[in-house]
Image (cartoon, rainbow, N blue to C red):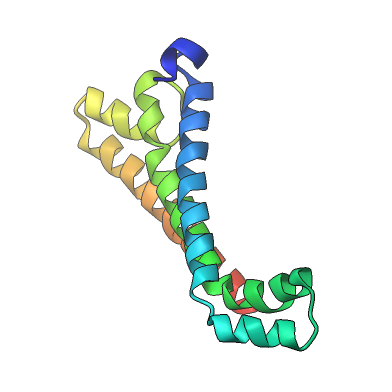
Length: 134
């Protein structure tokens, strides 16, 4: 649907990846906030906290696990999905994979797949350590 507007290339790929990641992030963020006990929020208002204080000091820390899970999911899925635009010569890790597919080279396909998997694992480990550091 975006090809008539932005053409077939890097801009279209970036727009699609951004929209997809925003849908996942908004879903996980709102789910994390909805899982907080309403009585806890009511008690903080009863103690005299403002809406901003409740959000920053109560809701955000309690929803942090869900937010980090959403970020981890988005980053790993974006790394994998970003290999697909290589089919339209946009570049990225998918170039190795699809070049191997084109010339029927198992070695190139394995290298492209391994590079993508290693990058996904590295990002997941990095985000896990950041979440624990929090």
